[in-house]
Length: 124
Image (cartoon, one colour):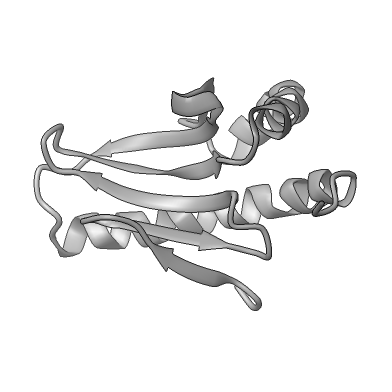
């Protein structure tokens, strides 16, 4: 995780990124739904997000070999996400440990792909 930067969203949301904030990993406890979301979010321009979606879609079989519950979907505001949710009625020690393990798995599996994608899409 060397070089990883953190950011905190509202309430029970943690964001981690390497260099480009718009492509970040999240762990988010949805208290009302009693779920924990862990995944990679694409929150750049709608065009860049669509290119990321198109880049990751044909790689989902490979990704699911390591992250079997991962789903890729378009999301709010032209964003996309590659994520999974886990039951989490409360944000307790067990849920936090699960979040750490799942987030690490996402970062280990996806960061090489994110890096390859971003090499073709340098910062403006």
